[in-house]
Image (cartoon, rainbow, N blue to C red):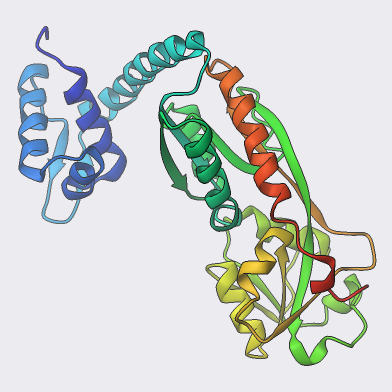
Length: 307
């Protein structure tokens, strides 16, 4: 077992994560044959098959399933040693792996990445966009350094740093711009467009509309905020979007925006990271950059119909 290498561990961890030799090789930046050779070498060293190979996918063997979490722990410990060294340097450099939920990423990331590249040119930024549950899992497993999500996440092992709060806006067809803004009871009678299950913004919209126990008949689902807004422009229904998304998603759609009279639906966006992370000080600095980027995205009052 003395011939085991961290490189082999990283290749195996990528294969366990992606379940496919081609995608794992792409994630590792090597060719598929090279990755396959390294996995076979690893299997020879440990004395047993770690994966079941088929034409379409890869499954872990029983040994592979027990091997994977131990490999992940080793890699996380090695990464944290590097983070510890960087933490003592007192400046941001090297790799930064940050996750962002889909209802934030398209609108906030350009400002964040631009500011970080300008202020910290030595930073190598890796971005992961996916749902909150996956971000929390990958953060806990050491695959991410931090994530930007809707708070609270209420995970004892994670630190939460609130960044900003934003309101939800009503999106409806342009011809409805002069109509009274509906209240919650009126919304329940309208055809409401929602994101697919798994999006935290869907749950927040349902909570505001008091529809958490059962969905009304007139509900349609979309895979993105852009899809929802375009459906509204086509006259299919109404939807809610976070304020930061409004300038991007409504500029080419035949829709109108309005604020609710009250209570104002809103969410808090924050950054989370492991309590044990040696980069806590640097991540607080990044949080400040995110706050500034969010301030630059405030929707002009003139773009909204008064409630």
